[in-house]
Length: 538
Image 1 (cartoon, one colour):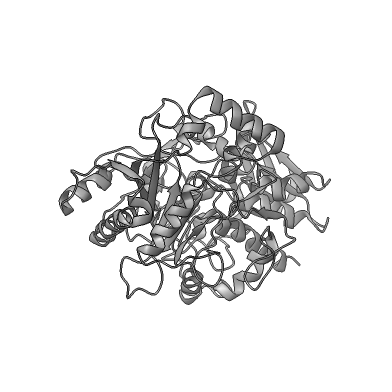
Image 2 (image 1 turned 120 degrees about the vertical axis):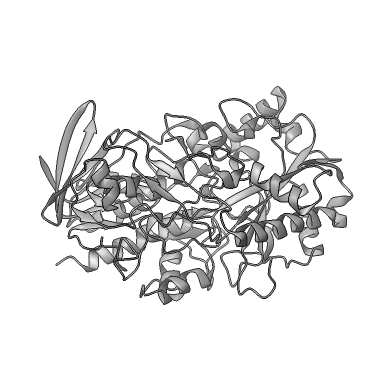
């Protein structure tokens, strides 16, 4: 058995940051266990290549949620990164921190030092924003953020104009003074390549002698001596291996795998563990509970002007953008599918937006088996306006099915299981149609393809968004943070309640979901978590 000061399970958005910051001084030895393999793959590094990684078992866990009555009985696809960088290596790269009120609510719930003003320095320190430093933005940090203002499809300008005609302000920076409005998204890329957490943090850390990264290493169990975590058991190359942690074991496996590993190790709901014959180390009913996720839908239109469909679909177009990308690291392949978007309130009396918008200058109504058809769009000029809820009240859970670590856990999302979530989504899809009806967009729309003009009544709109909605891949809160062990899994310093030498540091600790994409906040959690770990070392 080899011994390290810290064992980090998972090399994703938070784990990569932890590996970098905990090893930087040279004082501590760090072992990183990653169940997947390398991130050095063409479609991982090429930003729009995530259409190819969306179902690729070489880099993706490819989870499936349970059939969901809230989604018309559908079985939702849950992609999660299984490689260096985790989901930051296969996501859509939109860089959104979240609203000030989100983090202030975390602090108000009994989590000191997690308010917005506490976390802003961390966000700024880790960022290298192409737009330059100001009161809100950081420059010079490890993770580059690209300003796409001059690169987006021309149709994006019409979307921005229509959003303003519908009553939303133009917002030049969703990570600035406020979130509300429409604008162009910043993305986590640099020089036309994906800027994953692995590229920004883990790869530099791997050059240090005190860092060891083991790939294709599936953590199967946390090892305990009494109530103290002392190591990790893992499978690699068909062998069971163990590693010892002299200081701490840190789970950074994400909102699916962190609760799964805790439960497999005897930390979780007592009835579940007893039923599966897993010896209980510490009973905690919150492990795997309180699942929150953002759920979204696209409204798709056939246009009168060319969209990216006319470039990305034909062979000659693929050749053209491929050469543009390979030679110049520019063009559509260097961007996210979400050129622009925004935030709005379905209730004007609310303190912050509760809905997020996405504008895509192409359409994928016609499916293609085995991949997300981003690189093979529809044969006619199409575009989509999508939206997702920001802080839904529906709650689900993630629970293991057996004591076998290779068995995928049961993901029960319970989407749209509250009247409040249904009501706000109904109001939101009507607002999408309002944007599309504004002069800047209406004059170039041939027809609404999905859901189509026949869907008009509230009942039909609800039935449609239940049938066509799905996760937008932002699961959180399955190991949520809080001061009360009866309601949370980790304390405000991210230590697992009731145990020693064990922390969870990833998006699963979010007390509640945030307003926007979760990757930036996940990376910040790794940064903040590393600071807490280092403060506690004697």
